[in-house]
Length: 260
Image 1 (tube, rainbow, N blue to C red):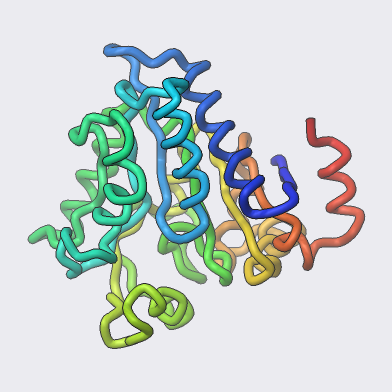
Image 2: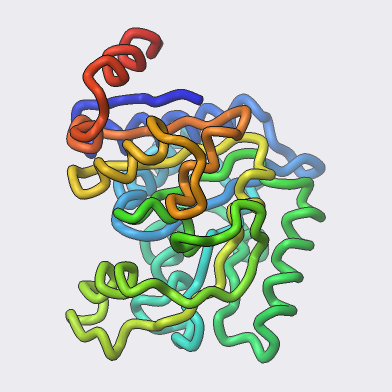
C-alpha cells in the first residue's frame, strides 16, 4: 500500500491524472488489447478528469482503446436527469475525449430487472479481462462506491439502500431537498473493486481526514469499507495535506519519506 500526500486538491488531482495517463500509455492499448479503467463520480475526481481531458486535447493521451466501468448509478433517476451519473460522466468527461460510447459502461438504474443488470455488469467486466486500474473516491464515513458501512467486504455488484449520511451529503446536488435525493443505487461491490489489478483511491479535504485515518491506520473493518484495500496488493491512496489531519505525525512522515 502506498500513501501519496500532495499539498492541495489541485496537485493531488494532477498527480492522479498523470498516473492514469502513464498507466494507459505504458500499457500500449490497441484494437486487440484494451486498457480497462474503473471510474468514480462525485466532486473529488472532477479535477482529475479535467487534467485527463487536457492531456487528450494536447494530443498526449487517447481513449480510443480504453474501456471504462463506472462504480455506481442511482435507481429511478432518469438517465438524462442532470444529476444522474450518466449525465455526470458524459458532461464532465466522456464527451470531451475520444472514447467509443460502446466502451463506456455505466449501470442502468432504470433496468426492468435490477439484479439482472448487476449480474450482466459483472459479466461485462469479466469479458473485458478484468479491470486494470480502478479509481475510486470515498465518503466521509469511509464508503467506497455505494458500499455503505456494514457492507460485505466480498460483495459484488448489487442494489443498495443509501445511508442517511450519504443522502445528506448528496442533497447539495438536489437543491438541498432531501425528498429529491434517490434512496437506492446500483453499485459495484467491494469484492468487485478488490479484483482489479490496481486500485487508486482519491481522498481530499479535512472532512475526509477521519476516513483516511480509518482506512490506513486501523484494521480492516466492514464499517469502514475503504479499509479493505489495505489487503489489496497494489493500492495507492492519493490525498492532500488537509486529508492527513487525523493521521499520526510519524505515519505522515513515513509515507512522505518513501514517496518517489
